[in-house]
Image 1 (cartoon, helix red, strand yellow):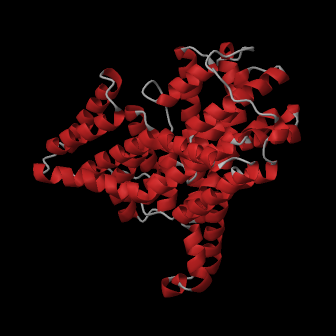
Image 2: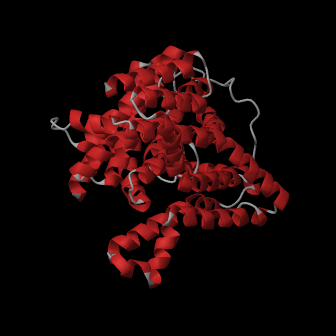
Image 3: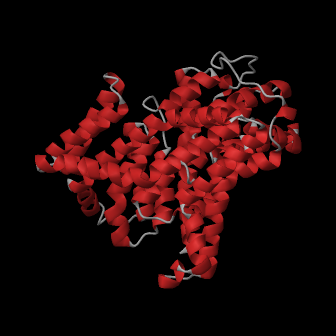
Length: 450
């Protein structure tokens, strides 16, 4: 019975978002209420369950997402991202342009949301493709592959951070394992996939001298942008803090009261996402603001605009968390646990499969991740699976098979000036290819670590 209600709920959610075009957050909350009733929950408990789901997810995430968006906006508006891209391209040379694009996109993707990274990098990469005389997709696919990979695996990006919080996984450990998994994944999804796509969809790899979707592009003079060192340091500051704290904890191995005293307590503090992001933001205000001779008003305007850009993202994630809590309190999680109890598959593979199904049905990677996390939690606990590995497995599944119900699908089509058929052949296949290889490398790493 629970599965019938779940499938009907997903169908209703799709109908509201795609056909009715109702706001995604409103659709999620409405669907959560109706699904709760369908699952037989006490009507007087439904509001509390929804509030609990939203509250549990938004505590830490609101700070991490907000500060992350502010850092990304400061770096991009100061020209730091432009400097990073141009420097790497000059260092790697035209013969290794794909590698340069992958490295630049990977670095920028670690500190910016996919949409922000795409908007920022697309005009830069297109101008490089024009100069090199190569099809835009030849460089564009490695770019979006790197951006998608960082979104799937690396905190402080929304989905992995939210899932890590939901599964009580150590964020620093997720980041460390995520980097290990992301590097080979982006190679397979970037340069390797580009070669395959050129063979089965050659019509998409035409040389274009202009793209209609660009509109107004902010131009920078390279000598007026921040230096490469300070730009990359500002972008990676949160990663450096969380990574250093995680490595320290792995080396020291202190637990109990010892972990809360002396140097251990300070390392734990600066390694927490909230404090790491706060320190990084303060540094970005100086390095990309005052140090670049920008006024406090200019800095304040950039910070305000950055929050506007993520407001709806936060609402959608909170709506997904509410839907997830309803499924948990309504017994769907236990039903899935009983259903797969006799299935001899790795919990990581099951977590990936659940995320894939939800991604295909719902479109949003963040919603698919959060819902999958809620459904897989009982099985993860009972099986003793590593929470950090489960975060990465779910992250891999959450990017699979992006199609018409995903905003990223339409962004890719518009920015690369493709038909819907070409977008399905390139973008949808790329995301699925990335998802499968991501899972493969997660399973390999899990076998090595455990």
